[in-house]
Image (cartoon, rainbow, N blue to C red; front, side, top):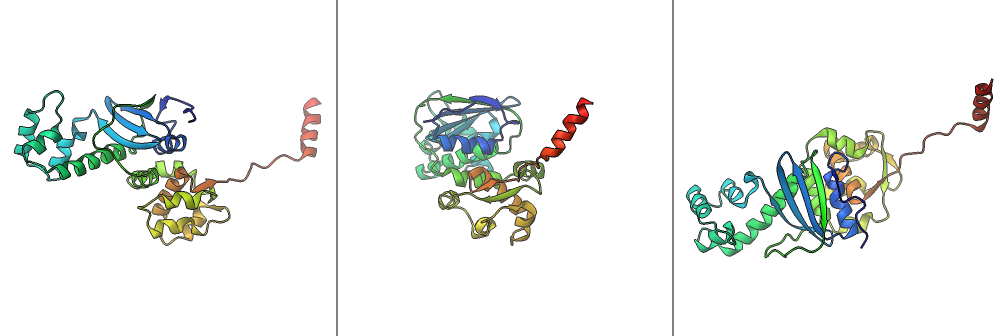
Length: 258
């Protein structure tokens, strides 16, 4: 396995979606630690796939998620919280007290893990650190392919400034990569409308032209194209900057010497 080039850095320099794809490409294993304004998130990565996540924010805890979604009552939430002791998690207590069935707990933990990771897609500032190596396995883990994770994570981003920066502007040119079909085949949640964004992208086209050829709204096309760029479905192929003619370079040299 190839080592990650940079084991820590700022999320202003490496956008989180790009970091997710890089770890997937390298089949990296370890703990990805994110920090922002005193909040920490830890994401366990196994062979490039994100399989578990935790957060230090009280609002990101499992109990709060269950309460927000109406899965438990306020009284159940408070009583279970009081029963927490070292070595026993809230979910176990909720099942033991009959507040949740075991299968409901499994579903809730998976959903909880997804929400913590999707929340990290919203972070544009902060710091990341990679701790390589195996970590103790969790009883319940996330089973979602990275392309689907990236598609959903970016779908939740509404900031046009990030989408525009991720694309490189209106005149940036893109074409399908040779790996496009293989990557798209792994994305179980990909809709036909989003797939159509790149179906006819056999030769380079700029973002504006791609938008005109799609039945989706321009905002959604751009957001989808950004996700496809991160996933490796499309490649940016801007033309090289024009070179100065040799005779002009010689004339400049002569003039500078006078």
